[in-house]
Amino acid sequence: MAVETSKDSKDSKKEAMPPGMVMGPDGKPCKICTSSATFRKWTQLAAKQEKQSSSYPAGGAGATAAAVGAAAVAATIPTPTDNEGAAWKRPDDCPPDVEQLGRATWTFLHTTAAYYPERPTPVQRSNMLSLLRSLPILYPCSWCASHLEENIKDHPPDVSGRLALSRWLCERHNDVNERLGKPRFDCAKTDERWKDGPADGSCD
Ligand SMILES: Cc1cc2nc3c(=O)[nH]c(=O)nc-3n(C[C@H](O)[C@H](O)[C@H](O)COP(=O)(O)OP(=O)(O)OC[C@H]3O[C@@H](n4cnc5c(N)ncnc54)[C@H](O)[C@@H]3O)c2cc1C
Image 1: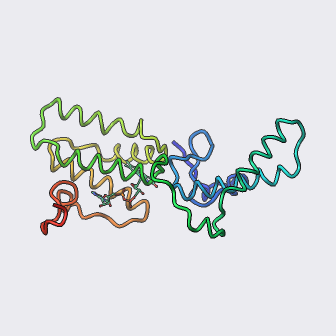
Image 2 (image 1 turned 90 degrees about the horizontal axis):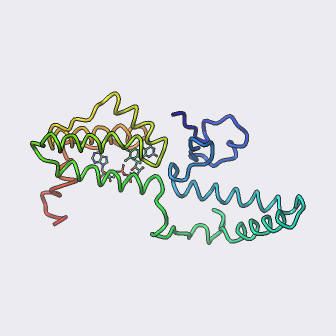
Image 3 (image 1 turned 180 degrees about the vertical axis):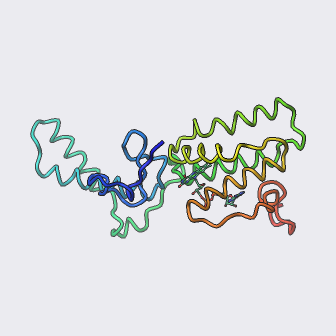
């Protein structure tokens, strides 16, 4: 699946997007593929553009009302240069962005792998394979899903047992880390991170 970020795009409209904005398969900004900070910048930009266009209403009561509404919204959104903008904190109960969704998904997957049986039954293997193979189809961040699909083609899931699965998953996560410019995780520490906690007992 081809996915563009605003950085890649040659289209002048898309070049007006903040860096890091990801376009979805429908060609529109993809909220769940983008960090909330980047998406907020785009929302501000769009609201500002609406506000500017509201100075020159195209005519019609509906159009004018919409423009006035957009201008009112724009006026309430702090810009990054506002003091209020600098202090703005996203409420905890907002919908997830790409980072929150990623952390929650990795937590679920690594923990599930950490508690997967040493010797899984054929049914357990089959269920685990279904879970992993469904991710590239169902994961809501479309560009994450398409990268994962390619990655899984090159590295088929190893569901033969707990350690093999944890290792496989750690490597897939490291592939994403590498692509995002993050440090690789030491896969020897997977159990410590996701099951046992550190030997000093600080997590107990
Ligand atoms: C399948 C999938 C694909 C994704 N693809 C993209 C993408 O294409 N683009 C994008 O912007 N984001 C993507 N994400 C989200 C991204 O991986 C991160 O979750 C997100 O950027 C938040 O990163 P983080 O630094 O908070 O920690 P995360 O990467 O979410 O990691 C959470 C915790 O896991 C531990 N950890 C880190 N690496 C490993 C590892 N290799 N093995 C075991 N434990 C580890 C660390 O303790 C870390 O704090 C994807 C997420 C998933 C689940």
